[in-house]
Image (cartoon, one colour):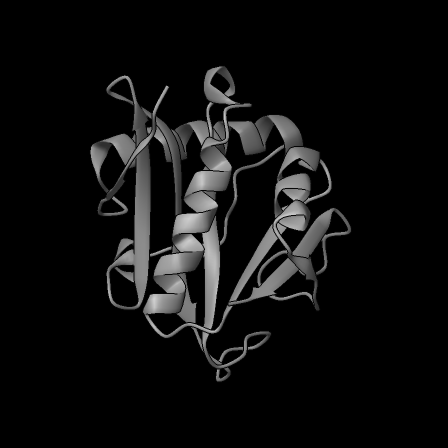
Length: 158
């Protein structure tokens, strides 16, 4: 089934639906939601972007990036942090996450960002597989979960 990508607001109703499902998956895997502070405005162009992917008229994937620079601990000038990458279980295995990742990298590069960074967890092996097979390599820890032994941090130069 073909995938139609749309730039939306972080607080778009379909985005909020998928983000809520993602948060419940975090509860199942980690015992709690992701508590990283997120402001919807951080995902508004030109310093951010949020994407939804639709197949058959239904939202089947989401993800976004927000700009960071070296004046923030753990970040370098020109970083784009990937957040809220999610594919519902029924839509997995179709390449939707890779398509969104590719578009997020493209739009971040076009916005002048030089590197994509992200945090994921050891109990998300499918996410780690996606990122490492897409050229991401491990980096120093940053953010809220840097002391959590389950957290993994990756980056890719754009």
